[in-house]
Length: 256
Image (tube, rainbow, N blue to C red):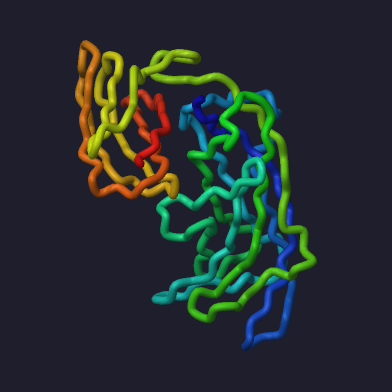
């Protein structure tokens, strides 16, 4: 069964209560919102990283939200992202289950930050409607942990359903580029159809960390690519192929 990737967008609204040890407590109203296209206005394809969800964070309060100053680590708004109740690790693997956006110096009223979510798929690996939840957990000062914070009674999350449909690959909806992807001993074997133009190959951990990448050139016939994976830990990995026209196809493989 193949995975389904999420490419629709949602609107989330929340209110933050900001506290800092050197100042009195004030309240910032931050709206988290995304392009509100009709639910059926786009298409969600299985096994394809075609689009990502971009969450915009706007400071709508009259008070300047204290942010990073030159030379420090800055302040971050922290998110959790769930699909059907399963938490997704943030890309890159460095933040665990926490997705975060760093607030720049003097995050003025009306300014906007973005959080990009991609490479999400349904845990149940099925076509149909699935629940996406974006939860804002806290805002942290990375130089003074614990300040600022989000008031626990604020509206911190929004769940919305999105529909996941059939695959899209280099050739279009319903056409596969992979003939086979499997592990043999310490090698990952990738068999594909013919490749046109330049194609970027990546092996991505479930945390989002890219473990292997290379560029493949035009190949008129079917191709077999062997990759040494003796240094990979046991787990699920995503094999991604993306051509120079922007089409991308991905498949999961389990490394024992």
